[in-house]
Image 1 (spheres, rainbow, N blue to C red):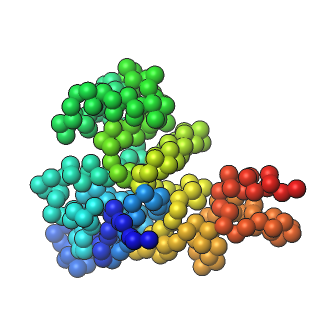
Image 2 (cartoon, one colour; image 1 turned 90 degrees about the vertical axis):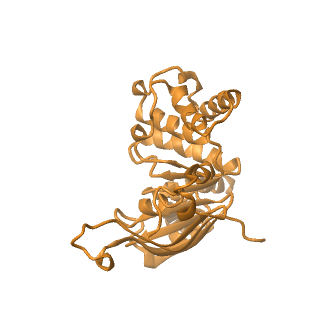
Length: 283
């Protein structure tokens, strides 16, 4: 099958400004020589410890940051060339959801907040109305459309933030630790929305600390000290002994214990749902 990348990173490095007293060559690189493609319609998880560079990398996907070295192409557009003249061209292709929803909400009424993006790129009012309603229904927040965001829970606010991104109708949605500030119920709701978006054919990039979430992706990229340490399927990643610092999902640990007790469990089972479905089929 021919490659069809929506995002291409070519030897991308990025260093934050360190101050005038620090020479550019001495600055610490948050991202250091990273190259990979993200295929259209795929679900990619990016994981790594704090300071590994994963969130800095994520901001390159829709030109919030421009590489210090190398280049990022979004649907063939070089972000460095488009960011100054037409950033919305990039951000209509790649939407981004951040960890703290309060940093993304701009209006005092939920439906106005969701409409903010489409209004700013000149979408017709009737189309904005349709997008707002469909986005709120997809995230299960339509009944709250007339409320003020300040009256909502953290999980509900995050769902509104996602609706605002969906209303822009991007081909790809980047989630930068969207569940980090949520309780288990809120995390479950957000992951359900992410699965729905991917099932609709959208490309999903999920930055996360939770291995149970990463296990649901088609592919996991591990960042360490600004570099890509590993890039493989979840089954391959969680079977590697050289990545011992990576916490394995519960399903992977339980499947291992079951195999040790003599129950044949396939090595490619990495999620709770996969394990439950397999065990239910056993006689």
